[in-house]
Amino acid sequence: PVSPDSDRRVSARLVPFGNRQFLLSVRDVTRIHRLEQMRRDFVANVSHELRTPLTVITGYLESLAEDAREDPQLAHTYRAMEAQATRMRRTIEDLLALSRLESGDGRPPETRPVSVPAMVAGLAEDARVLGAESGLTVELESDPDLWLQGVESELQSAFSNLVSNAVRYTPPGGRITLRWYADDAGAHFEVRDTGIGIAPRHIPRITERFYRVDSDRSRVSGGTGLGLAIVKHVLQRHDARLKIESRPGEGSRFTCSFPATRILHRPPRSASA
Ligand code: ADP
Image 1 (tube, protein in one colour):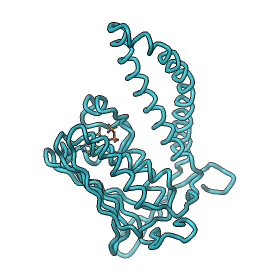
Image 2 (spheres, rainbow, N blue to C red; image 1 turned 60 degrees about the vertical axis):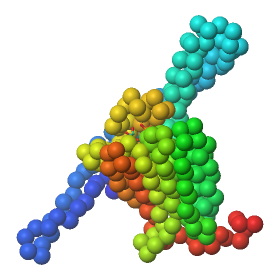
Image 3 (cartoon, rainbow, N blue to C red; image 1 turned 180 degrees about the horizontal axis):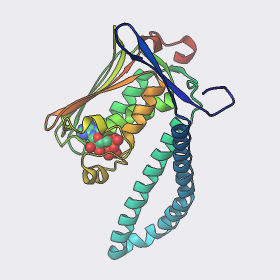
């Protein structure tokens, strides 16, 4: 912002110019900023407006459940409607989650000590339950003393999106490995799978909203196309980075890397009691 009470914004950049000289390039980005804000408000408002009618539709649907059990014709229609209502609800919830992540005033979010070991243990358990039907093996390696300064609900949502993707994009009999560890560069949460993989040309774009490599596959498996966009935003708000490595037909590895400054090496006494 140009001044605290105006929404005028400029972007400034130093551009190398000749030998040991620089040009200061200043652009007025107020218009782009206002349009972005309008887009964000619009998406948030539409998602909010759709939530109420959907709740009403779901309520009416539930009242049909009893009859559907006795009538095979109705049961088919009922299941189809219920599946679509669930898909719509997930998309609305993800859009609202993204709006909340984007709606900050630019200030860093309020953070607390987060027990990531407990979080990833829960996620591994969820993945075991979800993957049991297709015989997926789920492994977990986690440093029990490695906590993070962060926003628990946001980290939970980012990590669970990565784990649920691994489950959804790994064919029966595959293996999923979760790792939570620290090294000289910081703390890392890694989700590795032996799934379908992603072709190199798609990798730079898969964190965009609604970008899907195969939209039919994503929809059938319950995807909204917003999971990785949520991951990207959450990581940005935690000064963290997402690294994506993948080979089609062999599998993928998604690594979230947090700076060492966010690491808490031992659970704080009050939180671990
Ligand atoms: P979706 O709800 O469609 O899974 P995401 O934003 O989570 O949306 O992911 C975007 C796209 O990236 C997916 O549609 C899929 O094509 C690809 N993708 C994400 N995770 C994986 C994975 N573990 N293995 C293979 N492809 C993946």
